[in-house]
Length: 392
Ligand SMILES: Cc1cc2nc3c(=O)[nH]c(=O)nc-3n(C[C@H](O)[C@H](O)[C@H](O)COP(=O)(O)OP(=O)(O)OC[C@H]3O[C@@H](n4cnc5c(N)ncnc54)[C@H](O)[C@@H]3O)c2cc1C
Picture (cartoon, rainbow, N blue to C red):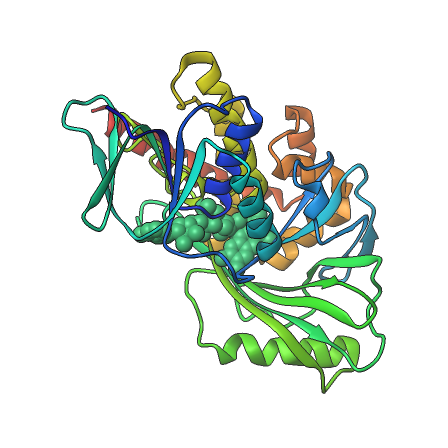
């Protein structure tokens, strides 16, 4: 009655990480179909993230750093966030690795096609994915198709948008041992802007101009400051741009529906995997995949409930977004205070939602307390109003 046990619609980060987790988690006889419209043969993005442990994809990491520079408002420091390392994974290496791995899995198939529609089966026993006029039935469908950006005005809808170049300089000018996590020594333009520098060797680096704000800008508004930064910080007027990437990641506390219907589960960005206060998503898609596999083992059903602590961190995310949206304090000031007053490892643990309450309090006492308290009040009031509205 089913063509597959599981269909994964969208074979990007979340879809491929889920297939990998299923294979590693003992589902080697489950019939799995992955569908994507793209052949994934270009290096369309670079994923970076901090991590204390070995990643299951450690062997394909392009680079990693133990030293991270932070340049804030009147404060600069090289951080050593042990046990965390900051890692870089190139999209193309991930896609190629996963293609090779999938070829070796006799229970998994890959289909290139445009998903038009996903719906419940008429008998309510599974779900159907339509690819043009063909339909595929499965017990469960995982949907990671690129969702529209959130616009619900009852929530904070920030965007993280960035232009990055891998540049090759005519002379040695980068320190390959130190990656720059955030450099706020640039014009802020009334929102939150920083540059991110990931040196690949002494002459090559990924340099990325990043903005947290509500609206995207014309191309030149990214290009001009990026050029200016490279010239001012590295004295470079001429260099080769080997690769360019532009990205937009939602930084929103609007809830994403994880279970749109009985046999469909949204995953990845579509399933709320992007951390609202930072936009970091990749490792969260890996963690989500592991939780799905655990849930399937436990109950045969992929859905899981979030822990109570994730609600606490949701409130912290919203509070930061409220501070930034209302320009209560500049993002440059907030991140400067955070990194000036806390060990980097504590901040990473907090952003990974792994801290205890006493550590949360330390983090909170390091930022501008009156403005964060005001923002927290607004967030809790809105949440209460939404919750009581939902209940009535
Ligand atoms: C340029 C860029 C850089 C990023 N850098 C980082 C980073 O450094 N660290 C981090 O943690 N996060 C980063 N992110 C955020 C996040 O990790 C990525 O967006 C990640 O790829 C999200 O995974 P996903 O599976 O939800 O979406 P995707 O990886 O985008 O996968 C969705 C897939 O669905 C396919 N698809 C969409 N619509 C259809 C359709 N109708 N039919 C068939 N297929 C379809 C797409 O082709 C795509 O392959 C970045 C995002 C971008 C855009």
